[in-house]
Length: 340
Ligand code: 9MR
Image: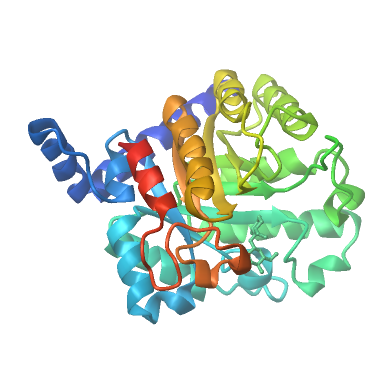
């Protein structure tokens, strides 16, 4: 079992590396330019690709018809994650009836433009369709397993890494008292990972959460879970650090926290980065996070939670790298410099 896990994880990493290389013809050219002319690449994706990393954005299919949106996405990013359309409520609105239209559109766009796709998210206490919320016991367990098989199975081969389970811990390190936890007991998280492994043996399988931006009670509980999974051969390959931040965030242990997970033997990914604020204070937080990822070998990439401030879930905090007119902000320059 443990060997299977290692082989699978290794396959996933090789596959991701190929995808990155194949994806980034431009990046390869940029890297050569870098070597020959001592010039850094001048987009986020190409710059990240120089060190074998991705730089991604959360995307909403409905905005792809807007030229500023799609042009910025295609020019700057080499990875996509669905902000909402691969979640349970979107993909299985009625039991056993799947709707992949939004997710398929994103996968097609990514593949046509040489981008990787992260999967977000198979099991979460939020954005469950109504029919799931009333289920109990083994009925809920079966619904969860069928959902994972349906969605991860549909996208098998297309996804670089899946957020198999999202946000299952509280700040104090205890398990969140969701319907999943209450109905299924502690084992539900590893059951979800086993089901995802079966449905898509090549995707890397991640646990994803917020508030894990430091060595704290929550990140330590997740660390202990990952160590336990690895010791028992439960298939986990990566941990996602959402990193919804603000200026003034204490990032003094941010890199050390990533590193301790990497040292356990999993990849780490910055999965939902955004920083409330503006100007150089905002840029400095972005710089610190990007430099931390670059300093940790197993930090495989960064995803920002949107492209433009105007469509952000926290739009009033202007947390992203491009303003409402798709102009690059100071934070953009800080990230680009840190990647290079
Ligand atoms: O950005 C997403 C927003 O459009 C949705 O309304 C919201 C629904 O809960 O989810 C947001 O994305 C969340 C992500 O899926 C998980 N981590 C926190 C993100 C921000 O709330």
